[in-house]
Length: 123
Image (cartoon, helix red, strand yellow):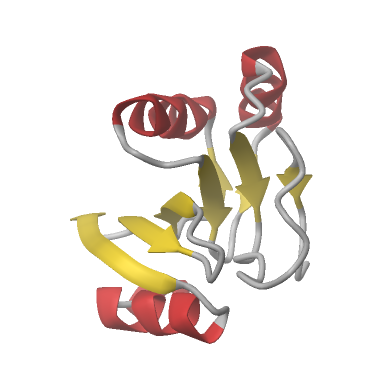
């Protein structure tokens, strides 16, 4: 799925999970930024990566984007990939309750995102 994933397909995935897509931008061939809103009105920034290995730099990029954008939470979404040990360490060191790591997009209507959690759902 990752090799041929399009912005349209990623938006469809977000809508299927129950989110309203406010903004979707393809940053690179394998990287997207999505600004989503759940039914409760909470804004979520998703940095989606379609690569085998997600690095510490990706975690830092998410932290920077969340700091600059009007998002309550930020999710680094690994599409068909995994988080490197360095990425997991950087995530833990940042200790930011607004940041989350995930291997699938959490449902919009589900339980609120736990503060600073690694959401290894769907894997």
